[in-house]
Amino acid sequence: MIEQAIAELKKLVPFKETTEPGDIVLILAEEEKQPTLLYAAVTEIERDESRRDEWWHVSLHLLSVPPQAVVWTLRTPQFTGQESFTMGGHGRFIKAVRIDRKKPEPLPASEPKARGGLRLVK
Image 1 (spheres, rainbow, N blue to C red):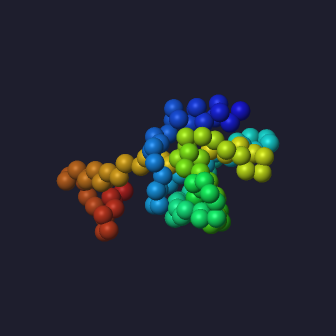
Image 2 (tube, rainbow, N blue to C red):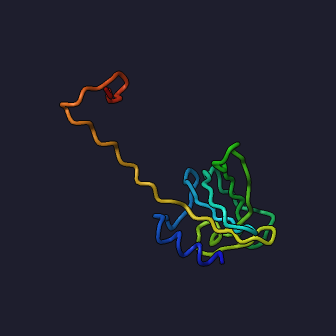
Image 3 (cartoon, rainbow, N blue to C red):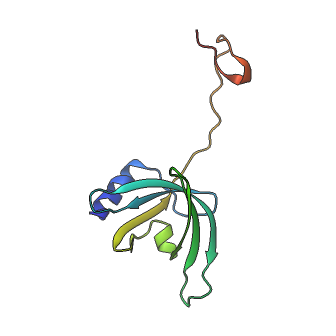
């Protein structure tokens, strides 16, 4: 079931191929009744020196109410969306979202502006 949801997400969301601190990631969590989607901010990625293979401590701030700080220990293919994984027997998928940082379009000169750059609506 999670693989179908991942395929649909890849059609809808512009994803990045890499994940770095400062990125926003989309997390798909397979639950018993229905999948859950949430966003998180990646704050830190540190090598787990206690393991022989390459594992990483990925620090995330879940953008939920209330916000939650978590640290997941994952391999590179897991936190870059190359493969799904399980936590507590439930499927998970995590991948960084590509966010184009464009400047907002300026308002046409003929429209009146309120203070602070907001448009005056009558």
